[in-house]
Length: 364
Image 1 (cartoon, rainbow, N blue to C red):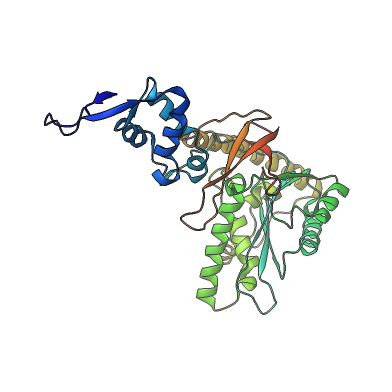
Image 2 (image 1 turned 180 degrees about the horizontal axis):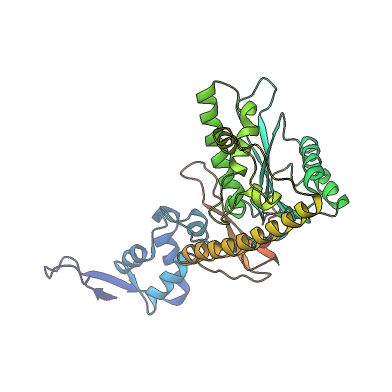
């Protein structure tokens, strides 16, 4: 036996504790009783002080620290108000060929219109930020494929499309269609909409515009969608310095404001120009616009990355490592925040891994 006097207590003598010195074989039992279920899985300091009132052995604090940090229940439950720092930002490469890489997602269900539309299939060119939103009655894979083919008939076949891991995008039919068109399918990480950030921001903007359109006009959202898309496409993007329409078509589109200006100035006559001169001027103007936009987008991405990475943490795992996966799904306040452990099966990049989930579907 040994006596222990807490440093913070007074000298009155009633806070002197008799400690039993615990042999190696019994230490795990003491740790389990002091920390596990009936002790509430408290933190390192509280568990350590609880043990000190009754027991002691050399290296006690180190053993308590290891035990608490390796406690599986504590790991999957998480800490109160725990914020998981994100990995460093990896921006999409700035401005390649227009419609070379397409980001795709679905929005809905929205209020059902007289036409039966309840969903939107949204698409965005990663290079020019040119958006498209196609109203659909259903987001089953056949309806999505039909809408995609119509989109491709206008702008050509992309080299790759990026989607989330929704069941419609992970279906065999969707995979077969992309394979037959020689289009690579890039899948975003589960529970991570930030990997489709440009398209997610477009969703927020478009929803706000549709809400205001319905409120102001009293009409249904799918009736105003074409003009709302025109407004988005002719608006200058802060990241590129150009509107999406300018980067795709090489000139400023004729929108409502330009039409009004023409009426004010009666500027309807345009100088005649032969086809060769027009094509030459068009190509030069488009090339110069894309070059300036690429530089502006790169600068904007670098600025965003510097700001984002200040709070990021780069974690590295290897194949075979055991990991927990975050469950950022709203549910009971008593629900675990993590699940696992699972085994890392493949490393795709510094921030993306494939893990084996026997009790769940395959996850990234």
